[in-house]
Image (cartoon, rainbow, N blue to C red; front, side, top):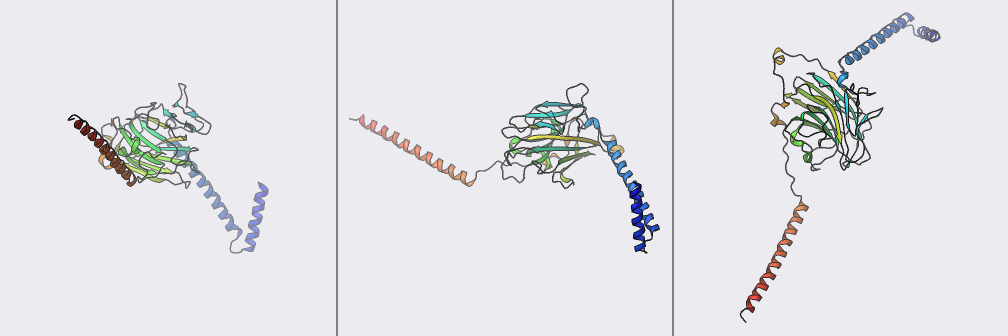
Length: 352
């Protein structure tokens, strides 16, 4: 260390002798200022890290080395179905057909304003549009329920965010897959798989999150009756807007979870981390006096309704339908003529 400093000072003296405009005294001042700046910057970064750590709620978070996950009484998260824990991730479903798996928090969430960052990975051997089905991120009243909605129950109560990797509806619909969407359930609404959940979708976007070369993240922020969804899937280390929903009211005391399902098509569905942060939001006295929310709801729900039209016949389908109809009518006409001829012949025989 001493030798390095001595060497650097010698270089500074030689530089000063060659450059009279920059005497050694000024260089030493610049070096001191640079050192002070580095120290202050390091402290600010450390303070920012401490600030984020203070707002990270570990009791609602799932991260490596995945302590507090399992079947013991002290665990904060439960596994269900095919979900298994590895050193690098929680695998909800393997790349095999007809599997369901989930992980659910045991601790109900009572925060009014929060942010959830999910690091996930979907990958497999299947080709594009020959893989499935996707995963769901949940904040719901119910927990640990198998079902048809990405491994969770239908007619759920709460928030569902779906990373759908297989298009069930008409391939000509104006969206690409994988597609991430938001749904709010009140205990009576059903997720429509045939139309990829469009009738109950509140917002969403296309995100190429399957077999990605980069880490894939989604970010959910809920504050003051506003929910925003952002994604980071292209390795640019920047968040892109996916959905922005205002007037959304969520009760507290619901449970966080993640689930996945495969059918005839499959993929690996992995959760690497789920980190929840508490947000500080300024509330007015009127907002503090609002009645407690008991049922999830959205103001002016009609604005989110998506009209799903029945699929019409293509030109080729219409041609074959018309052709077979004509052929059928022709066969019926021939059969009718044959029956009529025999009836007429039998009637003639009666008069002889």
